[in-house]
Image 1 (tube, helix red, strand yellow):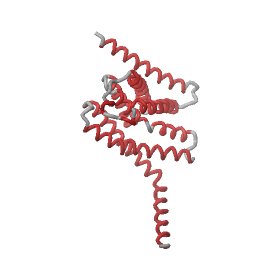
Image 2: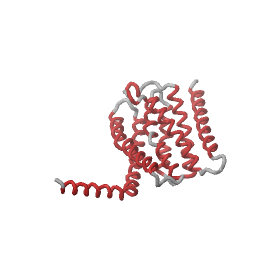
Image 3: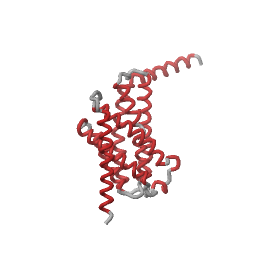
Image 4: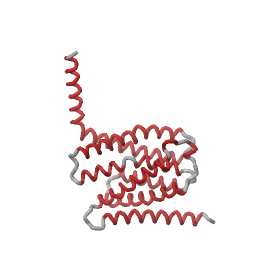
Length: 244
């Protein structure tokens, strides 16, 4: 039977992908001057950047149709799945070792690994996977850039603030507003299997949890600035009323 060799080949390719990402992490850590988190985030920045660009290209976001989402998976789609499977396996292992108490992050990476595994076992999910990957990773490069700026002492610069605000706004829009709309469309659609809908629902719930944390951070960090801006508007309104 051909089923056995196919599974063996897929497993081997996944293992190669995992080893490649692990080697890249060890390469960043080779001189001993970089912390484990620095090396992990460098790997994550690479994956997030490439996954966003390649995912959007394979997704064809400018012309998504039901026919395109259910098209037969191409070798390039499959290559992207295997490439990302190795990364998520590496990142999940890293989180277990260094971030064992970050339960939300563990759930996120576990869900991603399960999702990729499910997608690789279907013949028509290549475009769906590419769109999902790009959607989930689009804000990741900004998150990593924000961390690198902060860790190198640029937390009080205008550049850091610009990157952080861009990340926060983009995340809230993509995962919150756009994500809610897409989630509703997926649940109502008849072109996705039950397991695909469940995967999407899990990702949405995780996204809502992240949004809750982000909103709390925004209120903590930017509340004085928000209050100052409100006072400015009130003062400007008083001045305007006095001249009318």
